[in-house]
Picture 1 (tube, rainbow, N blue to C red):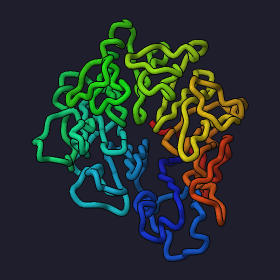
Picture 2: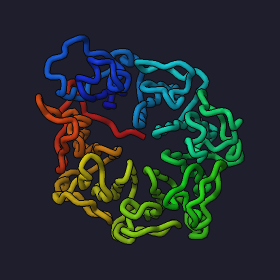
Picture 3: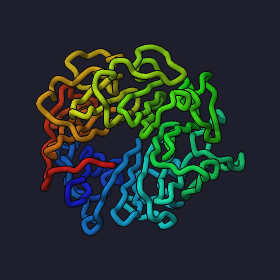
Picture 4: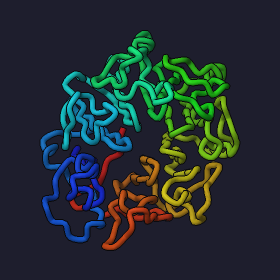
Length: 375
């Protein structure tokens, strides 16, 4: 999104022309020109959203959410898991009528979430996986119910004021500084010691026992990060992504980030990044395809946080991480990216969709920028 609140999106041109997942993810139609089908389309304004000022965006694996300045939520993409917030699908952005006065949104692989101005958390999407494990909605449903198609209040947190939410499984942080987790657990990503899944929200006691207030959370596929108001980062879950480089089933402070106060944390898939108060970017973990290292010169996973030296001259304002690529916004509004070439809008004729860019590369836009950081 740019500073005028306009939504910009990009993906593979052939996905648009064939009506595949790229078309609804883009939210607009490029017509029938099928030339150079593997060329990726640079970030471009979405015409149907021209008169709607967007203040925040969230992207899942196959769907997107956008939050307007009026507190309205729009969704589009593949609604297979019920993640769009309405019963029927949509090829372009469509308002979720059952939500109002929303302040933040989150999109995962199987679920979506929104927090309104009263601190109430709403979730929707897949209820349980095939093996019966909870997907992270935070409430009990009839065992025969596979999908929650419309936003539903998480009653177990109704006495708390939620100020932030992250999806993979689900993490929620309250204005009191407590962190709650729920959903499927494989590597101890819920932070309760044993890798036991939880249907209902449960406070992460190991964080509460630190005596400090937490202000933000981030959830990957199977690892978690939590940020304190003093700029300290705690990580747990999958060993290659939690920041410790070893298995961690309960939260511990990430030692490699102890030197500089951190203001923002992000996760996606099996990778993570942190932005310091000085605007320095640290990344760790690995991504797909080809297990690329997140922004560094070597082609192996980075087990602990490491500064991205290629951005040493850039004051980073925000970032966004997914399983295949990372976007970084400078304080000057310039956008950089690394990871899967096509997802960054950097594809060239004949390029393979799996081609990746290891080093941060400038993202050139079709229309006016600069971009503004997303909430």
